[in-house]
Length: 457
Image (cartoon, rainbow, N blue to C red; front, side):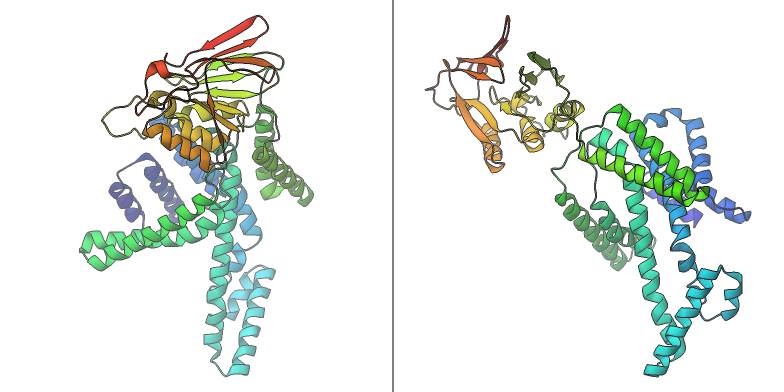
């Protein structure tokens, strides 16, 4: 099995996460060979020490952090809970017909086995089905139930244990992952042996089976991902993060040797702080009674955040990559740069998004911004046109965002700041292609200070 694990790491491209998994499993087998207790946290610590000695920079990689913390959550939280609930009963299903084994098991497991045999005997007498068949008929579904229960507990524990890094790095947290894992883990467990069989034998049926299981796994993952696609969470305040980590550590310490009241208190604290992290009941970090203009670093393009004295938020352009004949980059400036900055400010909704003109280095990131922050209005000019602008407008209309055409000469107040539109004219004709001098030009004034926002004019 160890050789198969390392062979899989080789076939999978010898990448660090897979090597860490194979190494941890090898430590586990070495411990079993010497009849040592296979404590997950000790194995995790040994693997982490070995890898950090050879490559200490992994400590700062999200991949290493998520792998380490997920296994730590399983070892420190899920394993003690399962050991106190279902794991002994699941082990007790082995050799159900061997009554002499009951004497060597803890009382609740022995009682569980006796009751199952009594139930099987009752069914056998009532149906005249052989006793051994009835016993196996009870054991198989119970094994499946225990397996599903363990998967659900482990998945939920990992989600809670990884809540902070997932929110900080990706501003996402998946609750549907619990049910997704219960389906995907068994499917992927069949992919590896089927894939090896296809590689070493060239048997097309094995390759077809591996592909089928992969397709099913992907379909399950995509369906679950669609349930939570638009839900994002800003990073919590530092004090909430520290309190949540402290509660997790307290629960881990109480899980093995603490009193029942201590465990209950620590669990209540973890769940309460987890709810606070997910709900994020914190107001945006804005300075009241002042006019703010922040330039978000999106490279050579533009994305400006205007915050009015009354707290209204206006985002002018969303950055993007300049147009070129090459294939579009996989990075989305709106998703990967602008949105994370706004979430660090605890901003979950924008009041207005402004598209000065439809060049991709200004409009490219706005699609993700509209999806993530659902502004009330999208401002543009009368001359806006081109395929990129039409796609953005259609996206806004699909999201229920009102498209407002602004023209030169308009003056209005928004959140205590005075806005004036300087260009272009309100009676312009949409152009088939965008031009820099067609940019929507705005003047924003509060008190003695004013900003001139020109787009690319």
